Length: 148
Image (cartoon, rainbow, N blue to C red; front, side, top):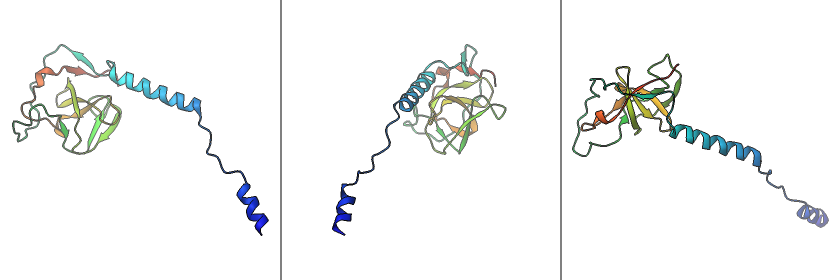
């Protein structure tokens, strides 16, 4: 009995699987490329020199602290690669999530934000976004989507 216990104690221990250095390098390269792509000027939404639409953002009761705050989603909102369902859906954004406003869509009722999950531009309906009073929308470019 003691011999069996001693043999079991001397048996080699299970080792964790080896790290796949190639897969790790490829994954890191993909992350770096996506980060650089998101930071670069995207060919999908592009800035134009046209004046911004006269549409006003959804009204909100605001205090002086609201000016300059990041807009936030009012509902569980869809974020598209262009204005609406004829474009590919990038993701849905949770209700109450703060987002970075990048521009005003050339299609009435749309804004371009930085997707808080994938960190790239996407289009969201004005009705799904709370923009606080005091936000200077004239400082944002009017943006046009690329091809669907």
